[in-house]
Structures are given as C-alpha cells and as structure tokens.
Image (cartoon, one colour):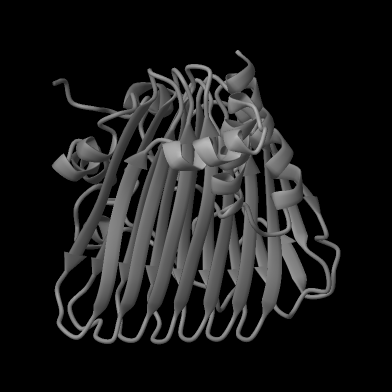
Length: 377
C-alpha cells in the first residue's frame, strides 16, 4: 500500500497563536511538522480508521476553496466572533486522531473563532454551504448555549469544528447532515472541562460517502458527554462514522446511543471507541450501537471498542445488527395493517428513539421519507 501524503506543503497560518492554540505533541517534542503529519497519516491506527473509506479524495480536498459559514444569533450579548482566539482560551490538537483535520487548519487562509462568555437566550446557528473555514468555539466558565448546525452542498464539502468547554459550562449541540453529496467529510473535536456538560444530537442521511469523524475528550473531573445519533442510509449511499471518546481524568461520565437504518443497497460503517486513560478512576461509560437492515443488499460494519488503563470503572458497550421482528410484523398485519405499512411503522419507531433535540422536527420527515421511498421501491 502506497504511503499517504498531503497535496502540498504545510506551514502554520498567521492566525495560529502558540500560547492559545497548542501544537500537537509530536511537533512540540521537536519533530518537524511535515514528518509528523506524514507519520500520523500512515500510522496503523489511522489506516484502520479509514479502512472503509478512501482517504485520497479527502486529502485532495483539503486545499480547495473554503467559504465563511452563515451565522445566526451571533449578535447576542456574550457572543464574540473574531479571527483570533480569546486570551484565556486554549485549544489543543492531536495528530494521532485526525492529522488531516490539523492540516486543513493550516491550509486555511483564515479561521473563525467564536467565544461564548455567558448564557445565551437563543440558539447560535451555523449554516454550512459547501466547504467552510475551520471553526473554533469556546464557552467560558458557567456559560450555557445551544448550537445548531446545518450542512448543505452536493459536491465534496468539508467542515471542521473544534469546541472547548470551560469549567461548569453546558453546551447542547444539534446538527443535521441530510443533503446528498458526492463526498462529505465532517470533523468534530470537543474538549470538556471540569464539571462541564456536552450533548450532541446528530442526524444524518447517506451520501456518495458521508464521513463523520468525532473526537470527544473529557479532560476535566466530573465532565459529562452524551451522544445521541440517528441515521438512514439507502439508495446505494454510504455513511462512515468514526467516534473516539476519551476519559482522561477521574469521575467522568459518557453515554453513546447510535441507531442506524441501512436500506437495500446502502452501506454503513460504525467504529465507536471508548479510551479510559490511566488515573481516570470512577469513569462511567456506555456505548450502544443498533443497526437495522432492510432489504437483501444492505452492508453494515460495526466495531465497538473498549481501551481501559485503570481500575474502578463502570463500562458497557455493545452492537447489534438485525432485521425487523417477524412477530411484530405479524401482530401489525393481524390488525389489518399492510406489510409495507407495518415495516415503515416499525422502522420509524426504531428511528425516533434517537431523533431528538431542537433539529429533530426538521430531520425526522426527511429520514422517514428515505425509509418510505425504499419500501415503495
């Protein structure tokens, strides 16, 4: 297998501030940036995560034009939008998780920094049209906010987002990735501070390939993370979800519930990894991935992982792949419901369990329609 490489040389952009944007550990330890990025791209871990997706098209797209997103609600008191990070905010980057995301940050001519200093009265909305510049969002101590993300673009959009939550801050994050695209790559990294809370409601539909890389770090004691996700992949489309959740310190709590429906011809990959570091005692982490296959040619790859380096933890993980229950279908049919309608009802019920949050009302009809179209076909 040929070595992976970036499309052009990488240099730190002008907006990169060393005292607020921490360089990856490899570079801080003296390794030059091109060598560090090349090593990370070709590591065994990185190649394993891209096992079911082609890396080259994403790498080639890193240098394409990036647009500014449309932001609604940014005029609220407590919201600061600029092209430089706040003085007391610090973001960190990990090449072992996503070297291509750091490279894209470097290729960008500008980045968008959004700092939320106090509790917001209304949601902050970000509308991505095609590829957008990297976005870095920080919440100050005790701040609370709701973040809504909408994605559009039918070619090869790329979107990268870093979030930093200070002590006792709370963020409810909902996003809809529902429009068809040739290739849609999304990267999300969240760092959760002491006693801070983060909730992600994720809704997705298939694309030529939709790739969602999610990296959540519980770096403060008592941090809490919850991820609830629902997706429908049909019509020979694909979704690749790679989720890493790291517990770095003691007494963190996390919960992941992911429901995917894969209809005839669709392809879904889910790799969920819980990494509990040494010293993260008292961790409580759960992961459940359930996949429902409809039709004869649905392809489902699921791999839940636990990596634990400490004692005194409570962990549970599991994944299921199945079809609709014959008993439930028979029960509905015995009540006069047609087989097609019965399948649609049961599929919708499975989907509704994980379609939550402020964007659920917009997402649900689109996801349900994808199921109905498959039943009608």
